[in-house]
Image (cartoon, rainbow, N blue to C red):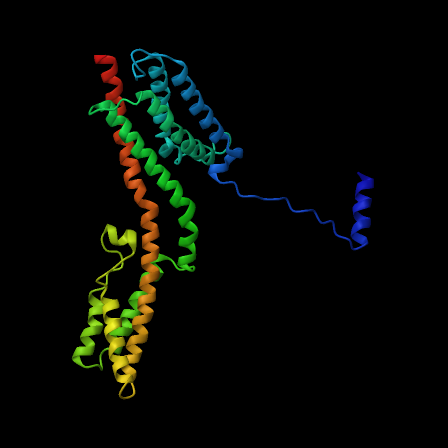
Length: 303
């Protein structure tokens, strides 16, 4: 200990500081959690299900009522119930060995393995009954989940870049501030020109219906109409006399408002695309659980 202290003192006295190499910090997403452990497990389960389906020989053909069908159905049912618990898991704060990232990774990959397990369980026999309804609902849940993975992988970065450090309330307040400036600037104008500005103030929607929020398109935007009309007036004046400075100021404000509206609509569009899949995924999951219970009860009661 004395020797170590003396060595430290000598190094400090010589003016040389000890610099430790920074530890390499890498971000690990839920898809690559623990070197894609759950992807490997899901692939193993899928391969096992395929092997069971190929190497069993139910008569007259593969179906959910065979030994292999019951085995695959049991695995699939247990997976569906477990996967539906992720909503509860998100409300529990813990770490290893059951971290939320690990649970989400398992949720994704085991959910995808249900495509193989559930399909082989049916023996490729579908009809107009509760059993097929459960399968269709399962596929709806899985496909909506795939959509969720894609948008969560692509949109958050674009959403952050579009915001430019402005929150949604700040974007809306900027548009309201431009409306106040437009209202003030339109006071000295004649009735026709003032009516054009009023179209922008009274007939501009930012969000709109679901389709408009998803696409960000507003074909009847009052601001676009007013901007184009004022632009036409300014262009007409430029061909004959000097443009009215009041109109050029209005046009400048309308262009700024158009840019602010475009930013806000992009923000709403991406947020809607991020959230809409949950409005299908979650209700479809509850419907799937109900159909699964009906499927199991009908099998044990009537078969």
